[in-house]
Length: 336
Image 1 (cartoon, rainbow, N blue to C red):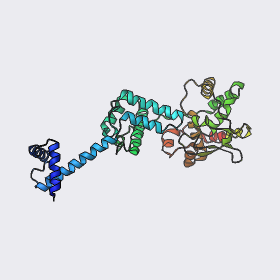
Image 2: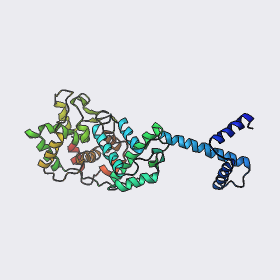
Image 3: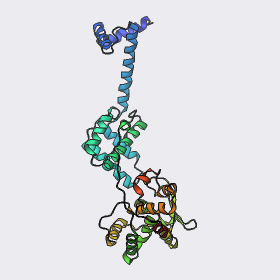
Image 4: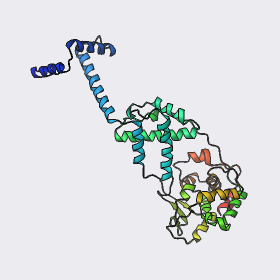
């Protein structure tokens, strides 16, 4: 029940808003027609109207707390400023394309729909399944950050399907090809590349990880190389045994703080491949070679997954392993 004071206050407020009783009646009639409650009793109509008003006010408040897509991109990049420079460069490349080519730039983050996200990805990142998946991951991370900041309540990218990626299997290097690479590494002007080659081939370590490793990461007593969070691509630490020719690393006496790979590694690695006779180089060929020979020799997929730093065995099964041309004797000689 409304007391006289409340009724007087509401009457004065309506007068200040210049809203007449006729206006109120029209508003209720329009609401009843739109909400299909024309046959309900008076209290039901008023309660329904009250819920709509409160929901609307809450929705407006949520929009006021949101920010534009451009601001969300900028702030999410700032929050990840401590990531590796290579990771940040990748993020900047994708987000700059989203802002430059997309239509979401000025949209409030809370109002962006899954259809708008899908249109952006299809229009500007559909050149390959890999690019589409990477762009989708970056876009998802922006909304995830927005949820943490209270700029949106859900992630519209969650409902988007991801196209499958059918990776071409990479053929492991032959014994002849491995010998050609090692022969070039032993030459005077390429000798500083030898430690990197040993880690790439006999430990299966990623090139980016090798370039971040220091001599102090090699434990001579345990005969392992430690890849900690600083060097690891995925952020997870692991220890990889030194087998085969990788044991040559135990003979080095370099300062523990010194990087294992030379600073001009990229240029030297390209020159080394060309001199060893590789005109067309398959990406991660050394890592794939290690994986295939490892499984042929030790028959232990979980161990291989752990040493390579994968979260699970699915990628190894679908892309990395190619045992057709790998013999047991070749794998044994490689690691022993």
